[in-house]
Length: 329
Image 1 (spheres, rainbow, N blue to C red):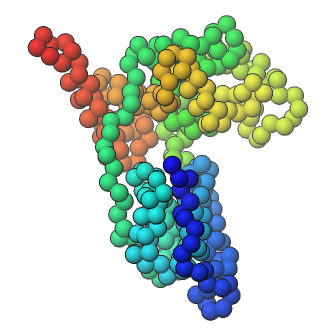
Image 2: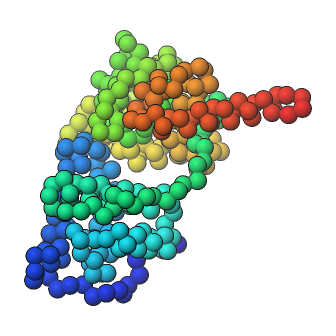
Image 3: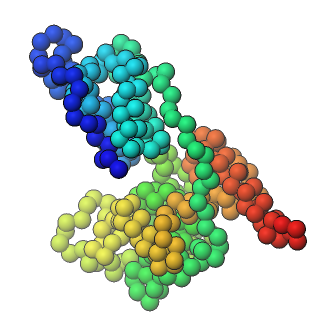
């Protein structure tokens, strides 16, 4: 598969300098992108990873515009569609193309609002239709197999068991778990405070076993792991971090993801990601009789439509159970 970089060639790029519209071929448009990405984190409160994704998508678009001689502030619907078509030709899937389009739409909305650009050519462009697939969930037995891979005779094993129990108990995103501090777990109230997209706060109750595992980790293993950081090179907030590495530093989302996927492979479930725990959490709640609005709140979804996919999944599971249990199934 191509790496997604459009092929070389195309119309010559206008010379830098010159008329006012040529400002887009100095560093003007790149600076506009930098300003836009900066406000995503500083004003809208989006995560650093989300901002990096926007920056990457828009840098690729800017390079294409330079090469093709397209003036970004005067771009047309036809030119934008041509750019998206090149992404498709380069081997990008529908979901990735839609993400690029979303980044471009966000940029042009902001440019118009800031008075940098007069028209928003991206506004009327629709994304590609996605095949609606059901989220991957785990059975109780599969979750149990993952949990049982932890060596509870070691500090890392106790840490990992606490991590896995927390994911299963809260439905948290892996990035949310990475950002957790010790004080975010309230043992008296049996709950955890999570900070989701846009720094939106929500409180999720935890079941007793998860609290017990977290307590066991905090009572000894975490302190011993933190004590290993003796060179003073830790980042601000490491001393408060809930989950720390072998060097006593806050575990990043990528580190936590690798940890989870390692245990999943040991359990014979290669290819399973931490998000499967989130999907399982949501489906278990609906199967247990929770209403959709409550599940939306616990997952931190802004739109109820995002949560509704789990109703389809819950029904599918019930149908599957009926087929397997019924004598004529």
